[in-house]
Image (cartoon, rainbow, N blue to C red; front, side):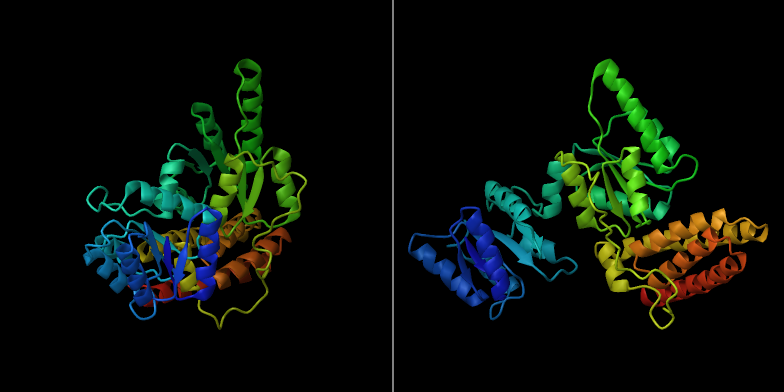
Length: 410
């Protein structure tokens, strides 16, 4: 195998990964050397069977290297994988048209690299046999296409985000928006894993899991069976919240903001039969986030770069998520004001918690911090502070809408 990458550190990383797989590896620092090495090896009847290349190569760049290999009669039997840190528009399609069979973005896990290499080599270099580019997502789709996951979350934007993450990884997904529906869905069908939000109206996540575990106990007594792994999701990062989840019978706990890679890792661990988190120290992914009472006025309402990363680089998907978030927040603010006017604070606490988690998912930091303060004011039954924070949220929501319209035009 030949690896062409201008970054010495990453050349070494990939060389070590391939070496651990038992591959014979040659590494080169630029496209010109790569092409010369490939042609010389063919002339010596000792050709390579795979080229792994970066696009941003010194000298002859990745596109020109791919084009040269594509046009060379000597190198028609060479399989090619793009491994790059640069991702743009129709890049993968363009490289596929030049004969590349695999496409991966850095950083890449060894297991993913190995799976993509195996599929590319099995499929060979015949460009007409399969027009589909082999990626980590296509590999995951084959791996998880028969894995069925039940997702319970009452917040529309969160459901949409999680659904997209899971389907992108190849899972089959069934969505419900409250605990009662989760229990009903569990009775009707069988799922390989359940993703359960803790705080939902009617029957919350903790109560729903207790009912599901009761159903499983009865079924085991009658027909036998297995225990379904359940992963709790919440914006509450406290050790107490985690303990409630595990005490109710959940197997693991993940806090918002949700990250696709971390979510996938937790799910894979649970599906592989990894032990429950009971007894472990809390894993608080958002531990470093500010907790409120901070002036974010000078900052942009949203970190668009990070939010776009959350939306997997898809601007249209990001705008869809933002639309769901702003619509939901506007409705909730109306309900908070109505309930607070008659002295009720539980509505403010509930919706502040929801807003806190959703804003964290999209890196809307100013709104997230205000929601933290609003939630605390509601817990203290401080009506005056609730009204103040609600007004602040209204102003921030307006600023967010204006910022998005200016920076994410339709």
